Length: 102
Image (tube, rainbow, N blue to C red; front, side, top):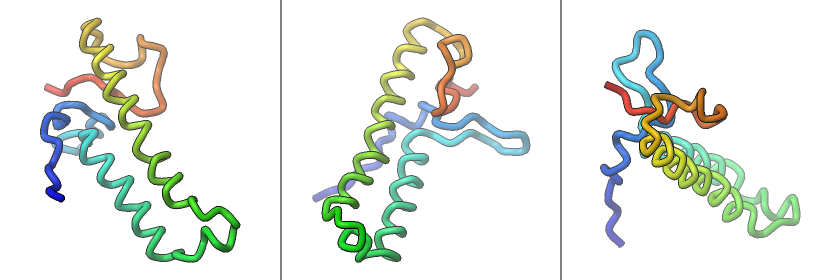
């Protein structure tokens, strides 16, 4: 199976640029970091699903990490359509600022 970087998400921001940083964190890169952290947890605790009695734990956590990112893309589209510059006037969001950076 071929893996391709979702470059169409490179201008969708999961995290705004912090002071002293050149750029924010794109949604694609943020998702990669989140899933990488999950894979490291799987490596460290391979037997955790059996210990807690939930065989589908890793699968459930994978989708719990990935699905909110799709909502972020949907929210970004809503912001672009309404030409709003940030989520603060859109009711706020724990996912960060979805505005495009200059």
